[in-house]
Length: 431
Ligand code: AMP
Image 1 (cartoon, rainbow, N blue to C red):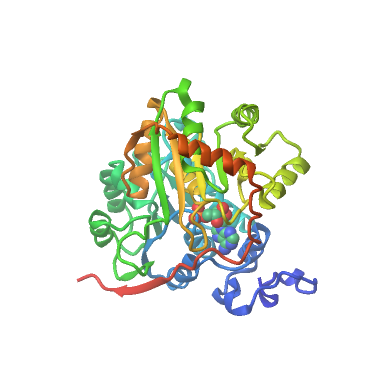
Image 2: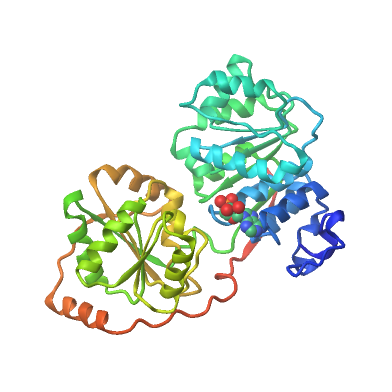
């Protein structure tokens, strides 16, 4: 936030974290309520996708945006929606379609946080949850509904959700929506909305199917996407090894020996597993550190610092404990336990290949986890063949133990932002 965009009551306060005015949310003329909420969330300036999208949405244009999760894309539509919603109206004014229950919850929470000072009601509706409770919630004042297409249609049929007041439609994760076969329902919903609505379509990939969906849904509008045609590949080489649960540790050790990384982050699904793996590695005289949620904050910080300074090469972590902690020179990420969700996979492997470097990611998958792997592949638009567990050569083992005797290099100091993403805005008109 720059000084002039701080909410009035804060303007007299000293604020050391003021942003340059040309990179500040105040450029968009947001209300004090929204600005204050953004400030409380710690959003000091817009991310690149927000910089590109906000002016168009606020000017009433439709947009098609190619953007991955993790870029701040939810707030890119949540901020202008919250800004433009009229509190006094009783019927929902915006509908956000999400392909999964988890995303519906996550996105409704993010919109709620941004609209909190304006007291916006943002219920999430999704299948697999008693419909009666959702009907009760929808009977109350509702500003923005976030839901999965099937459940949204269910409510429309029951009369518990009225779409006549909807002026904004967001189709989020459009590529996944198509993959999951939700298109019929999305089309049905669009048929019920006013022609005058504003449509915002977000997708991680923009293949032909998504483009034709965009042409169908979006009137005169703008597309916002990174400069290169096609999805920019992550600078990370990804390998997946099929293993059975009982050979997991042996397989992991072989992968570690073969890869022999200078520094590695190893992710486990639970705190218990972090501890078990830590003990096993220590027993095998492979020095490592760990962070998980049950550890005292002080000890966690100590371990993070030791890893940064090169006290040990391998840091074993849970997702929660590692959230928000950045190390810049991790050469290998290992998914000892395969992540439960595709976003988690992307976040985990994104710990390597930062700042123009290349990285590697190795994942262990059991039979039960293959379905999640397929979802990751669809989400990232990549094919990840499942390889048999590698064998190690004597030379490789020697090199591994030689590295264990060497003191690890301390990591570099954390620099500025990660590699720049250039967005190009293309104006287009429907023929
Ligand atoms: P998303 O791409 O929507 O999944 O957002 C990724 C993360 O970025 C979320 O944890 C948001 O809370 C956070 N975020 C969104 N906008 C900003 C911003 N302007 N500044 C800092 N963090 C942000």
